[in-house]
Image: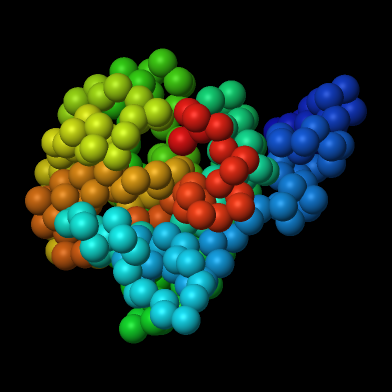
Length: 260
């Protein structure tokens, strides 16, 4: 009890000296992502691709599957993202991932939890709530040691605490690939091919929900899902915090080259 009291007093002193702020806009307040910034997160409005979750243009005829998914063979069974990788949400991901703002772990994981809760039941939606385990898509050990943490592992750990699904480190990054940012879809696919391997039989017979920060072209998700199924996973779905808007969406005009 005395130790808990001491930590509470220490935290109060730290808060007095260094008042907590929003990690995105620096507004004073207890939340790592303040209500104003949270309200600025742009959702992926329907209609969306039944498989990868990409936004589809509205029109007299609405396709069920996007053009990318009609051309590419997906190893995963479906993918969803919590919001658009623009504005506030992009800043939050960048601050968390590249500037060690780990307080954002909780609000970003909460967005993932809300995305799971909002997904319709099949056949309209995916079986996200029927997963047996959460599996973070891992960094290579060299990249993790350089960064000091693995963002997908942190997100998966927090999400596991929130929704009660066990977290399993079921994949290993076997190749230290170059960063995907700035590469074409074809270059991303070649760069990440064969970069993951299952860890023992940890995923055998399991319905897997893969966790990552950003879905761009799906190359990383695809290779991670392929490795999960090589390890015996019965299904492999993907859940990320964000994904860029499609080129035709007005929000896409705010992205700069190299943003994703």
